[in-house]
Image 1 (tube, helix red, strand yellow):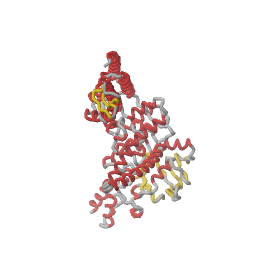
Image 2 (tube, each protein chain N blue to C red; image 1 turned 180 degrees about the vertical axis):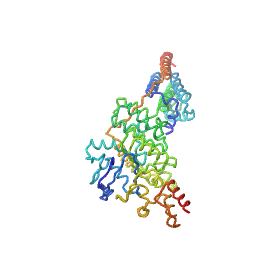
Image 3 (cartoon, helix red, strand yellow; image 1 turned 45 degrees about the horizontal axis):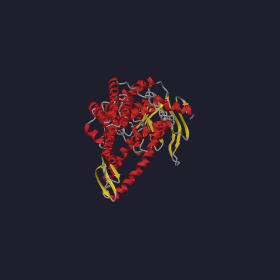
Image 4 (tube, each protein chain N blue to C red; image 1 turned 90 degrees about the horizontal axis):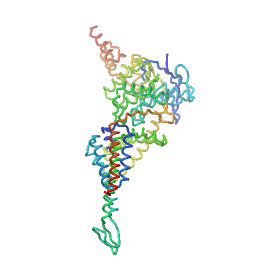
Length: 280
Length: 259
């Protein structure tokens, strides 16, 4: 069952153009769902709609099967259940103290202080920045700030965590440790993870489901092998295949080898290559 | 900015801020009230000893910081030392314009020297606080005071975003410099004005984004954050009490003896 979904969602910018038109998508608990889309596809606008910061022009956002009515208490509840990690950690980290910043969301939920402290320590531990909790925010590196921003959401124990381009600006090791962390949260807590990324090579490794947006419309969706089966649609909309799929596609189309280019992971490609060798 | 870097490396950083604040304020008060050479010098040495030897803040940096107010101190002392009179009777050295004598008198000299030492004593008290207590600790302390919370919250946000804007401005400056933006006086003026207006727009946007991010974490008009509890440091309290008492005793004794 979808924990959060949208039905025929429209969102209009101030200038009258549509940032989102007729978007109907859903997100499951315990799954990582990726939103792909070129710059300006409407990903960030969608995220702010899911968290109740923006109110759609028409259409509905449903949380646990109930449509949001935008009353004060419902919005409060939605924001407590749907956490957003923003792209630039400096936008999110408003406090000079890492500890205090991380505690903000939990304190706003009016939890008792010892519970807040417990959650804060737990979140700092899980994101691997426990030793930095007494440091000033401005002394953190970009990757550390990003982790602090995630910890600030984890303390709220939301059912849904949205991450706007979490891999942007991280070094390769940073990307894989972050993705492991997300996988871990998603599997252990059953949290629904929604993320947008331009790092298309990471997508097939970690995503359970993919939505492709283009200029505010839903272009296609499916599992990674379903989405990457049609590379032409992606290319028409300023996206591309993961490098591994692209290689398999070239082997298929230029060298007339029997390869399945919807396989986009190293494991998948290895299987395809071994099959080729064995069939010779 | 250098103070901010030094304070986080100070070994005295983890002592409860209230203890450091009370100690430095007590010493500051005694130093000013005592009005004595000995007490001023004693205060300055105690504070510098604490900052450098216990706090392990590099002496070079501390002495450099001590020279920051030196210009004001010397100028102020000079104004006190020089006296104007109809005759040069009480003056050690003087010159006159018409019938008016300008010179340095013995009393003036002592007063100027006393003021100078008192200044250094007081400044070292303030440096003790600012080189051992991070801003975030001071904010926590202030939140418990009678100052309205919104003022402290604003100060906290300003403090946090000074660093973000400083970073942005230095990046813009580098980008301008890389394209010869500061080659001549004329282009420098233009680049600086562009930088300033850009920073203004950026900070506006930054405020908007930060507000959105805070809202999404349930911001309700009050910045609710956890206040870490600090353990009291017994050795420091004992040390502080002994030194404050010693300074007080010295102040009284020196006051009687007039030194």
